[in-house]
Length: 133
Length: 343
Image: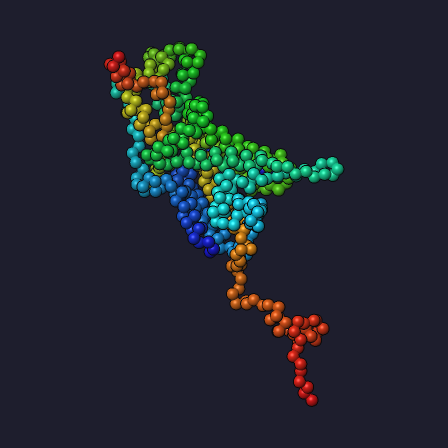
């Protein structure tokens, strides 16, 4: 083998790059799975079944955002006698009051950084803002 | 027809994964066993190929000289295109690997009436290759968020920039790299079809990686934006982190589109070391780029020279064969010693 001095270090660097996730995780266990906390109020009913919400909640919220802000369509959804105004704070966060224990648990795990909170406030933040004013 | 064959091969792979992953128990094969096998073949095959190349001697000093070499003091050397020092070679290789400088030099020739031939610069291949390779790199790095727990901040930043570059379109956010990768593959494929000369020399193994990567990108995009049923990112990440910590689990039902995606990626990894895709390692190993053009200053010894074969000068040759040369009437530089008469 010729040029061992450069080729062998090169190959080692390549293998380290490819196996990056293995040693970066420190050869440890997989770590904890996120456990989103269910609504503290004990509500069981949502606008859609849980499976659908798990997979598609971001698309639903995006649709609501477009309906309300772009088309001015503030039609209130009624599902099984319960009324849901279209809105993150007005609907979702009425039951899922704890962003940190519900939204963030999965979002942090999957490194998703939704821009909802650029404008919206969590109930805790809203309360603290009200107190300071 | 060469592209039809490659296309059908990719369709067959999709069908295998789609139908196979529906069979109970086969999820483990597609989600765990094949990915492990693929990464082992990829690493082993890659190292094997590079070592094989490293074992091949380079008999001559063969850097491609594309500019003025070192000459008299008042003639300016083209340091990047005719390097004589290691630092110049490193600079040349850097630009080759990161900017695809050889493709930048691509030209096209056309025959016009007359007949008259014209040559002009053709930068399309260079542009398409840049779009394709860099978006692919970003996508691969971005996928690390599914393998790392916790996710490092720089990775989140890359993700943020990639989604932000496409101006927060849709939910989940559209990635700029997704768009550019598909664009790059389509352009590279169109080039093979539209450019007659390139089409003539294209083989099934030129089309196959393009179709395969196109299918990988398509399944990924479908999974992220459209076919979201049973695509729960948490259980997918659980599997991915499980794979790299050697404790894989498939705890929930994951949609077929995921298994198609991961099977195609495994195919790409397995195919990699045996195909033209090895240009990833080969670009570092090409003697026409990584050698110095110093053959006049420093003798390049052919490594396969047999050390037992000694140099044989003309004087030595004549000494050995002088008698026969004189006999045959061939002129010699040194005459035969005068013979003593043996009477």
